[in-house]
Each structure stands twice: as structure tokens, then as C-alpha cells.
Image (tube, rainbow, N blue to C red; front, side, top):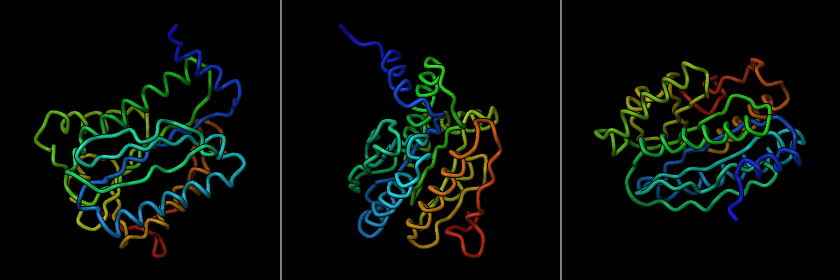
Length: 229
């Protein structure tokens, strides 16, 4: 007999009744990321994992999913609490179907929120964190136009927080088109500092109550990891 996914979710929340903060990492693993970029990104993911797992509250409240796009879009990790998160190995290949990847991320968040509601679980506003080093190769498709529309609509309705981060070579104009908030440009390949900031920010969120406004440090400060794109 096929199991009811909502029944499985209820059992999951009975075991860990903490409020949840869903975080989707939307990672460009196209061929242009080959070499040092993909290696530094992989190391940054390990920093993110270790720092969240070391925080007693964040490890139970922050949930992480990983979606990669390089030739195809892959859900490399569905949502799992930080204490059980293991970063997937990243391999650079193919083009950048970014619009399709964004739609996949938004659908994943929507589905997870339905599970929260079905289980009666509290949750924080989800985060979608996009990292790319180029231009979307599906920009002239309905998927890109729909991705832009849905990101703006979800931000307007405060359904989620969407962050766009450009690595050297990224098409910052397309990121500005996609994101309601100003995209950020990574300084060099400092993925470590980026993921340290992301971890600390989500630790701060996890120590609050759902619905609270939580200030986070400015990543574009002089000692930050980014500049305004």
C-alpha cells in the first residue's frame, strides 16, 4: 500500500516538533564553473554544513535542499534538517537552464510548506539562495518569464526570501531582472565567507520566533563577502 506523504510528514514533526526554516541552495554547476570555482563552492558547502550542525537549535530548525543546474536540473537533496545534511558532490557540466531551476525551487518550497501546514508545524519564511557565474541559457523560454513572474509574486506576498549571488562572469542584469532585491556579487571565489554569513544568518533566524523580523549583517560591508551587483 502506498504511504501517505502527509502522514509521513506528521511522524517527522512528532519526532522533531521545532519550527522549521526551509533553505534551498540553487547552485549553478554548468561547465563554466569547472575547476577552482566548483571546488571552492564544494568547500563552502562543507563550512555551511559544519556550522549549522554545531548549533543546537539551528541543526533542528534549519532545513536544507540542494538543486543544481548544469545541462539538466537536479534535486540533489530534498529537504532535510541541518543535523542530517550531507552536501552532494558537485560536477560541472552543461549549460544553464536557470529559469527551470528557479521554478523547481519554488515548487519544492511550496510543497514543503503544504507539509508544514498539514502537520500543524510552525515555520519561518523560507529562503531560496541562487549562485551563478553566467547568464541563463533558457532566457528566451516561457520558463524564464514564469520564473521572473513567480519570484516577484512570491516576494510581494512574503511567501519566501529570494537571494541572487553572481560569481565572476555572472550576468548581473539578468539577476536584477529575476530578483526583487539587489543581487550580490561575490568577491573573488570567497564561498567560505558567503556560507559562513548564510549559516550565521540562519542561526539568528532559528533563535527567533516565526514572524519576527531578524536583522542580519550586511554582506556588502567593507569586510563583507560581496558587493552590490
